[in-house]
Length: 168
Length: 67
Image (cartoon, rainbow over all chains, first blue to last red; front, side, top):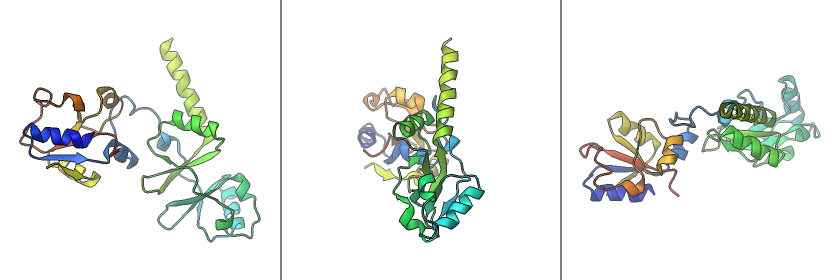
């Protein structure tokens, strides 16, 4: 749509026209501020826990499990040195044979969400797909946090009550 | 000929005074838009619709993405 708009502007006498081709999805994915009625509504990045435990592919699963337990986590995100998400260890995987490397135990290529996704949308998706946790990433796949289903559902539920009160 | 640009250049041009125009339907603009953008939906881009724009300053247009 924006290329057509750019060309049309030129026919109207604008000689210095630029097309931001990646548009507002790219802007939102980068975490830059937005304006509008949705700006005040919680998004994935607002609910994501930033202190999530991370690990590398070649670590021993037992070491990661111990680190996660000590930090009060039942999940850990497998990342590379650039913090790009490679896999996910949920409760079931963390309980695996401790001597094996993370690479053999993780769920590879987990579903990730962008920071701007509405938390109500996330809560519904995680409930429908029975996901306890989902990584939040930038558009180039770098981890920014982990959303727990319990957090997403709680916040979405609170929002639902707020809108009911406004209607009343 | 319009030039395609990426996020970093958008920010630089805005700092230099470029005008930013969202060409999506106005309902979508109301919900989410870039700071400082104005709404001129594609179907309203005509001589009257763009009368608020300054032809002497750069104009950046955008929608959701390149799709």
